[in-house]
Length: 143
Image (cartoon, rainbow, N blue to C red; front, side, top):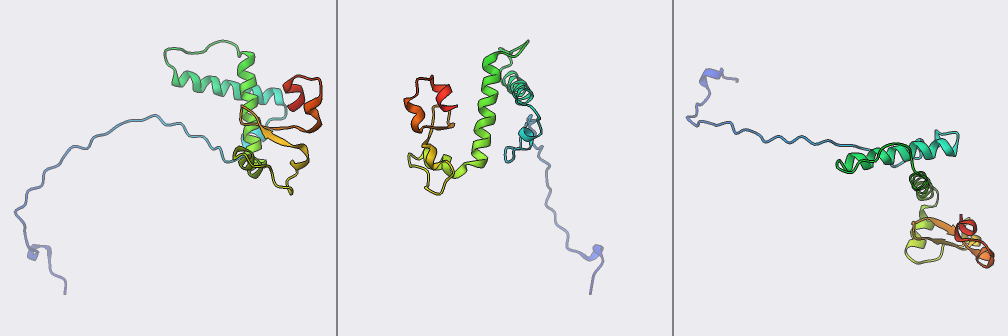
C-alpha cells in the first residue's frame, strides 16, 4: 500500500551544489567512409579545385598566424589530386593496399596482379611491369 509523502523518512543531510566546469571546443567532422564527395563532380579539374580549397581552409584553420591567401598554387591542386586518388584506392583496392604496405605481393586473384603493383612514397598504388625499362620519367611510367 502506497504511503503519502508526508510519511516518508526525512534526512538531515545537506547537499551542496558544485559548479560544473564547462569547456567549449570547436569540432569539425568529416565522413571519410564513402566516395560521395568525390563522385559528385563531373570533371577532375573541378574536383581538384574544390578539394584544394578545402585543404586551404583546413590549413588556415589550424595555422592562425601563417594563413594562406589568394589563388591556389599548383602544388596545392596536385596535393588535392593525390589525396583523392589515395582515398579512391583505399576504397576499391583495400586488400591490395594492405598487402603491399605489409611488404607482401598482391594475391593472384587480384585484378592488379599482372600489373606488378607497388606502393610509392606517397602511399599510392603504382604499377610496374615492362614500364620499368621504358625511357620515361617516374610519373609517366607509373601514373
